[in-house]
Amino acid sequence: MQRITSNLTATYQDFKKIQTLIRGRILFGILAGIALSLIFISCERVIQLDLKNSTPKIVIQGNIYDQPGPYIVKISKSVNFDASSNYPPVSGAKVVITDNFSQNETLTETTAGTYLTSKLRGVPGRTYSLSVQSGNETYLSSATMPYAVAMDSIYFSKSLFSGEKLTTIRLLDPPFTVNYYRFVYFINNVQQKVFYVLNDDLFQGASIRYALLSRGSDIKLKTGDYVVVWLESVDHGAYEYFRTAGSDEGESASPANPVSNISNGALGYFNACSVRKISARVEE
Image 1 (cartoon, rainbow, N blue to C red):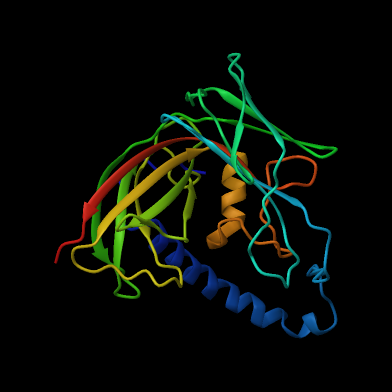
Image 2: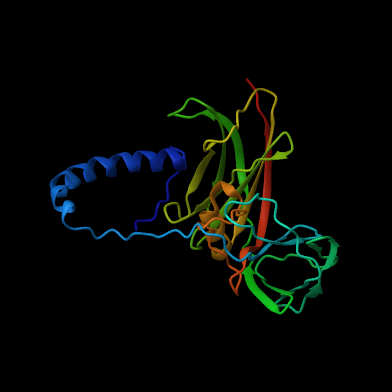
């Protein structure tokens, strides 16, 4: 793929929408020609979804940052697909985090299902390993903390498609490295449920403008709102989890569970990331 080195003149989302429109017109002509043959032949895989009740699974959600702790690991049990989304906490687990520089800490359970560090410190470039022992089962995961990427500006504009006011940030993607990003969005100090992920496949070493679309949520920016955006630089395992989790924050126990980076059939994720923040107030 040809490397993109010039500044981008459209947001990532606008680029993807234009790309989809172009592909759609090309595919329309192709599909029209083969429509009749699809009556007799189908090569599309049928996915069977199991919507029956299932045995609850352990759900582990852990984060380590390149910022002062304490860091939190939450452990709970999933619920059946048709049950409420209130997950019962898991108490009495042994939770240990180590790194490849001999840091080692057993976390303390402060409230039911919530385990905290007291001395561990996240350092970019290090690989962190998580071990959770609950009952007779052990769950393992590891994540390497990338180096931080800073955002150089934040501003507010209107979408070319919907006309709604958007928060847009800009960052310079480091060249010669593969980078994965997660954006966490706060409005008036309230974290929004929707989040955003991006990789640099199309933007290696480029200046990236990224607009935080509402994606069907009730996000409506107004004058005076105070906006904060976190840019988390994550590794591939955490990126795959958040990419497949979408706006459900990975808390769904449906058959479409996101891809976990934790062993032994556990749901959830272990994320070692560096984070940078930027903020602004919405003006007229």
